[in-house]
Length: 246
Image (cartoon, rainbow, N blue to C red; front, side, top):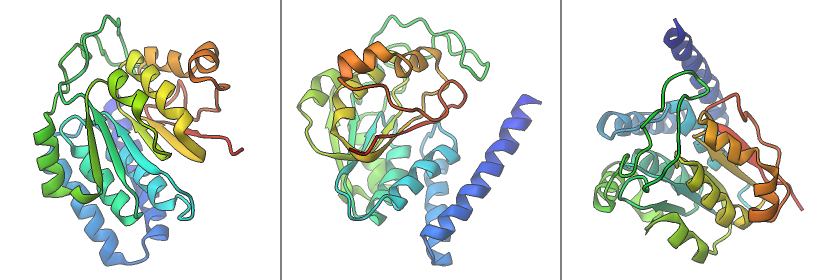
């Protein structure tokens, strides 16, 4: 019964998102082609996400003010399914997509995960090496199904690659699974997000990740800013932050 409710909820949300898509992409043929491409990616590339999660962020990309600078950043690409999808939206928005990943799977860690807030077990799901897609595999999938020319790939562990990154960020998507990786992303990337910029995290159902987002001391001492308002925290898998305008 729970799965039936989740499926119905997903279908209802997708229906609402497609109505919004129609307001952003006026041509019916263009919309149908976009949806066809997204479905093609899901068919041929492993995509451990709901379509509504990708479409929600894609609509953020399309609706972001054209006069504001900043790139789109994805942290955590797995096999490149989400990357290929985001690259299509990014191309339409005339922006650049920066992709951070180790391309070696999750880092070794000692995080003790038990259950998702949705009720299912996530024990031993996030061990080192899981969710690995090589750089060439990801690039090949994006070349075949996405818009490769808008993408820049940054290979390495986040703590090694993100401190040197300095581009302004308009939109950031996190799918990193671990509390430690979430901390690293927020510490080094959040200060680069422009006022009015948007963050999505696909990990909002993971209790240890929720604790990071909800930790006032972490935000103040490590990010150097007051904890922002976070939509859906502790309630939804996909959480959203809009950075305060200055």
